[in-house]
Image (cartoon, rainbow, N blue to C red; front, side, top):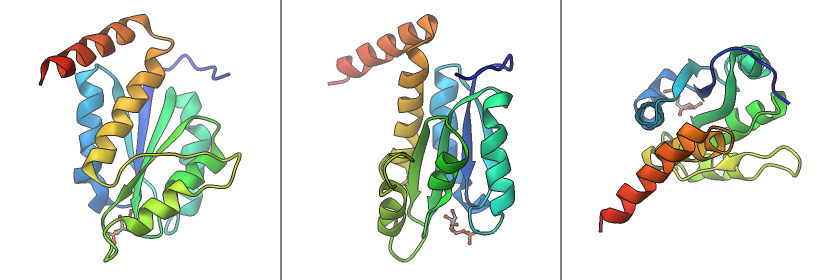
Length: 159
Ligand code: RP5
C-alpha cells in the first residue's frame, strides 16, 4: 500500500535528454486528463545510482505509476521495476540503428516477478503509456473515471 500525502502524479523518467521530445507526448496526454507529471532524466547505464534513488523515493513523492522511456539496450524500465513496487510502464524508443526493436525486446522481456507493462515503440507508445496510467489511476478516482468515459465516448464518435 502506498502511503503519501503528496498530490497524486505520474512519474515519467527517460534515459537521455534526447528522449524528451517523444516522452513529452505522455506529459501532454496526462495533462489533458488533469494529471500532474514529474519528469526526470536518469540513465540505467550512465547514472545507475541516481536512477535507483529516483525509483526508490517515487512513491513518497506521490508517484502512483512510473512511465520509463529509453532506447537501445533499454534497461531503464526494468531498473525502475527492480527498485520500486509501483506499476511500471515501459516505452521502447527508436534511438539506435535498430530503430527500437532492441529497446522493445530489452523492455518487454522481464523475468517473472519484476514486471514492466511494455507499450509500443516511440510516440504511440508514449501516448498509450499515459492512457494506460489514466486507466490505472481511474480505478480509485471517480472524477477521473468520468473523464475517461467521456474520452472513450469521443473516440467512439470519431468514425
Ligand atoms: C539510451 O540511449 C537513451 O534512452 C537514448 O534513447 C539513447 C541515446 O542517448 P544519447 O546518446 O542521445 O544521450 O540510453
